[in-house]
Image (cartoon, rainbow, N blue to C red; front, side, top):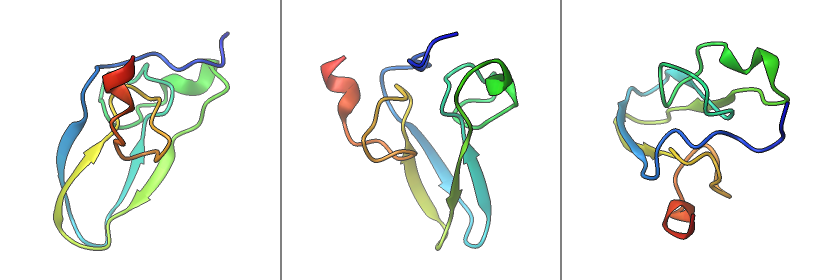
Length: 80
């Protein structure tokens, strides 16, 4: 078991979110339903992060799992 997340991809996931809907971002990097949680974190110290969409729009979820602005991308993948 490690406290470093698995990098699922070194670029963000552009997702159209729906106002009022909750999304659970995969923090461990092991989910097969990236960028969202599928329960794969159960063997890790990670838990999903809830994202509540306030409006319907495209948002960019972190794919490298190292963003300081989790669950959204902050460009950290450019330095990995």
